[in-house]
Image (cartoon, rainbow, N blue to C red; front, side, top):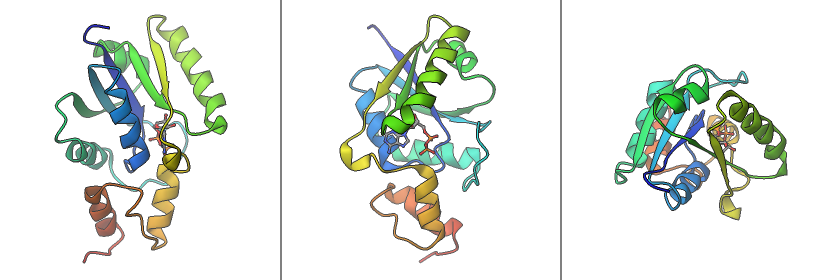
Length: 165
Ligand code: ADP
């Protein structure tokens, strides 16, 4: 594929090493990747960071990678992807439990925009148990999240939970 641009959408609240794994693997397949924080969460989640803060953290974590752009979007994912001429949507699959929802979303997105392709990536097995909601919960309860997020994310989480060094 020539100059293949993909969108990796999600809530990224916060970005975990599981997300980072998917991002870096995607760069082996596509030329440019737009990591896009969804402004309208499909499910109600008890959030941690504001949208702009999540975008900033993604930018900081991938500061060394010019092929990655971090941004946010509202409205339909396919409308955003089309506006950026990104015909590929990247999603991560941790386990069979992710599959049903992801498959349904993929087919819905394709019926909304027939040219789009959804690329499912599997993370390293050591990241399969990670989710942002679990990492948030562990952090909130005072657990050590060092292994689950980048140092910049960890520092921002400590501050959010009032645990500045
Ligand atoms: P979460 O489900 O952790 O709240 P997001 O809504 O931000 O995360 O998910 C964005 C995408 O990243 C989804 O496709 C999700 O399946 C994927 N993803 C999240 N965590 C991981 C992980 N540990 N390994 C692989 N993919 C992941």
